Length: 342
Image (cartoon, rainbow, N blue to C red; front, side, top):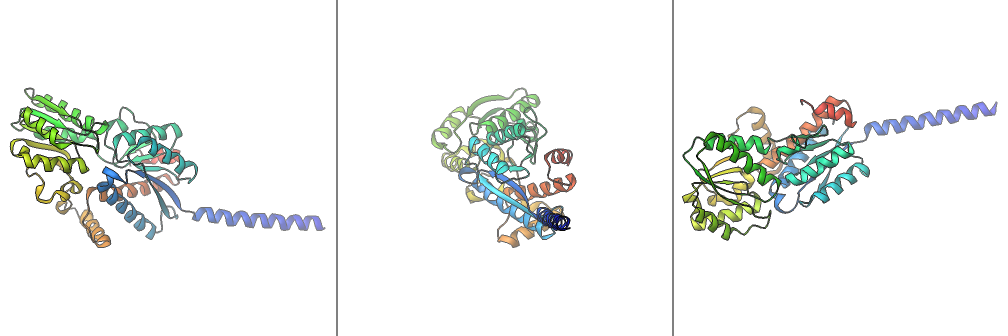
């Protein structure tokens, strides 16, 4: 009689243990990994981006989380290096067991993470990387994007610029994927709309290592009517200050992808060129009710006005939460299906 009683006790203990483990698993947080250029040239965008992410996660968790589970984000700095980003992606998935990867600031880094995600069957939401290749020529089921890409933004600017009087164009932008894509799309669309345009100069400084003096001199010597700019961050700030000294903006109309974003206007204060044609984020003038309510909450939370990075971080994690809800879980095939058409 002892053996059955012992077996019965052991079975009950085993079931009790499994029940406790199952309950703990159900309550474990949903871990997500965010890889971004949190230092160097990306910091003016990615610092506020992280604040936006944290704000979204706090609000999501305050409402009970997603599928009854809290959300936890593990942040990693890629240091603007594709190899560093891929290393972090591997560690986040293998060691930290994150459900998916988000982030990427630079386009070449985003492409590297996307390629890794494809090979490793991991969901990747690119929050900022703008190259259209990420979801078009190099796209796949495991990568989605948040922002309008270089093609869409470049065409919007070209459609406006094509109606203007300017014929002789030059460009300056960072010498990597984003800068080249941003120019090619704008240039090709402008030629379609205005066949008599002339391209008089292209200038491609290394990202984060611009020497503005010689570049401003070279552009002035080419005497363009207009200048297309895809610089950003500290490169743009340095270029503006040198260009202002030499009167470039008094002689040349400026079209700028990203240059209307507060993170790149606010630091310049009165030095910011006026009258540019730009894409950007005038947070003070977006009158939709939901946005105004969000701005008020954002300011109250940290006593600072938002920049575009703030909004992108916030929306990235609202999107992740909605995808997990739609998927009904965090399994990758379900997430792939959920993100389609979201």
